[in-house]
Length: 260
Image 1 (spheres, helix red, strand yellow):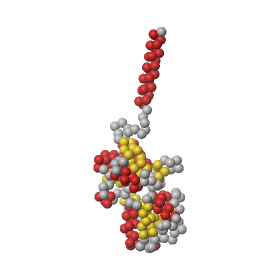
Image 2 (cartoon, rainbow, N blue to C red):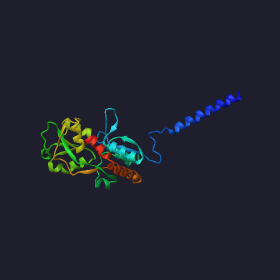
Image 3 (spheres, rainbow, N blue to C red):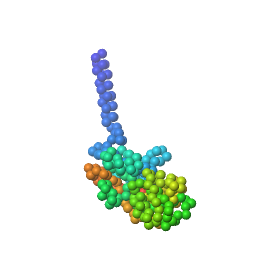
């Protein structure tokens, strides 16, 4: 009887050890890779094709794919905060996020105010769009009109820099969706936003508007940003990964997937 009991206990111990070994082999995809780092990264909302929600509610876009490719290349993981432009900046400044990727143009003014940027990962301009049936063909047609822009962006800076020359008023709103809605409802005669965003949204039918050619400003690079020098490691990882995905063709693949 004792011999049978011993055999039973031994078998149970083997099963237990086998189960424990199996559990060690299961890796939670939300855990940082071995020896890697984990970060909180904030982003904008509704800024297609750089960050937006698909029909299933997944957050996709050029910025999202570039971030994912760089994280995989450099062996770090991250939690994504899809919270909007102003909220992303505030989260980074408050230490609630380590960095942000949100189509942020690299400018001297932003650097002087505390932004710390990565190398540029995309060159973009700002431009103007109007309703599909609008007769506005350029800035010269804006006298006495209102132009909607997203607050705190390069588009606002661009609009502010030329509003007196062309005699229009600037309306600041929170999101890209808000400025498009202002044009569609007639609250504003035009809106200014990043050129690739406007052209992509018009091309895909998401916006029943038209882009006004010739309204673009000088191009600027988008950069990944942090607001605390203690997070410089994250910028270094981003730069190293960006160089690698440019070299291996992944970067070009991502851009082509959205912009052709």
